[in-house]
Image (cartoon, rainbow, N blue to C red; front, side, top):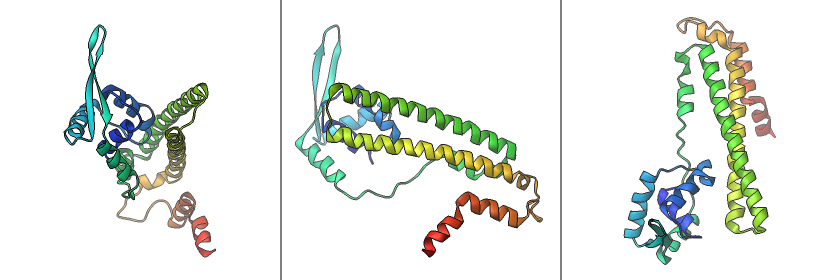
Length: 219
């Protein structure tokens, strides 16, 4: 997804200021995308130059005029074509997974500490997301209305919750794996590992649930 299409998607249902768009990114869309005002305003200028959106100044009493953006027919065509196109495979960039990949460079105790700390970070994020979902649902019930946008955003919120739950579970299981294999960090890699291979193999296979995967393939 591009910032261009995110903005067009938001403007496809309602007119908004740059601040309104940023707030939407900070709330619902933070589950799958983030952006800064320093990125949003240049993109709005670009979209206006491409005649995909227009803008007008709206007077405010005692405040500077605010600039409100609206989508054009060309912008509607652009977002419609994009939504109807097959998506590209996701290109994952997860800084913590990159760190985990190289955690053979620190002690097992430090690995466990980092995993527990990050598990706490994701648990906090999950709590915040649950609060967002609750507030969104209360708002929907209060307005007694449902739209396709609300329905599909609910699907995205659910997927976001599932991802956090899965990440927390992965942290927990990886902590258990490292605790069971702590002796590997004390081993001299130029010689035989301190932990017998068969024991390590059993732990790793259990961690990956390899037996279940193989059984499914055989069926």
